[in-house]
Image 1: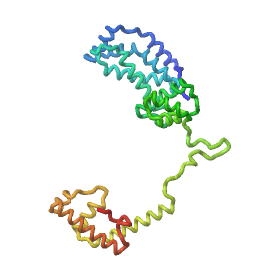
Image 2: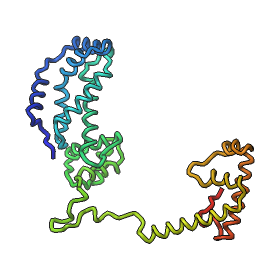
Image 3: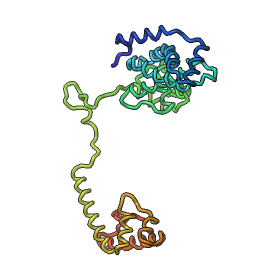
Image 4: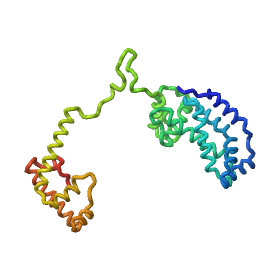
Length: 294
């Protein structure tokens, strides 16, 4: 598991430098925000965001127990800080730290959700709320089980967070399990791997051969039946029924110099002729799926 502390000298130096930045008065903060918004003054932006790097570090440290590098959490929080600076409206008379806190926390939480597991953990607001609050709430009601929760505890947490009980149960189960490599051995004294237990959903050799032979046979039947159509009927059936992209009646009508209603009539007539030809070859074509019902 990655270290959750700032171990590199450069990281520790960065933190010390950030913590030494002077706090901003509300008036000076307001002036910096206005200069950045109205004049794109980068010096003002750097002073504004630099003063609140301590806020980023403080928030990032609250997420270190998820096993992710604290330096990475700080970096993601910095992204949120920059997003806050880009969207901050100084005319609302709100302190920048209050506004930036939401963006910093959101950026860090998204990073944790993306990297805590190779399996995507939460995408909806309810799932995110469960991910970041379930452990705390279970501790609050002295529920320290291995993922199996009592009905009463599950109901209490679901009501407290305003989420379905099934989501509480699913998240509890997800958080109690760790990622496992499919290449890991089933046992210490075995060469078999977990991936060996995965079911192969592809068709077996015999099925593939039969499908291939049946497909060729159907092609032959259709080719033989198409010989009963005249040139115009053949064109319409191929363009309307035997291609991945169906050509519209209007387009075919313009190509053939007839109305789209006439194309529809010819298509209907041609389908009737095809069915009759296929019945004489293999029986009811609808039972074999050769001609779609229209």
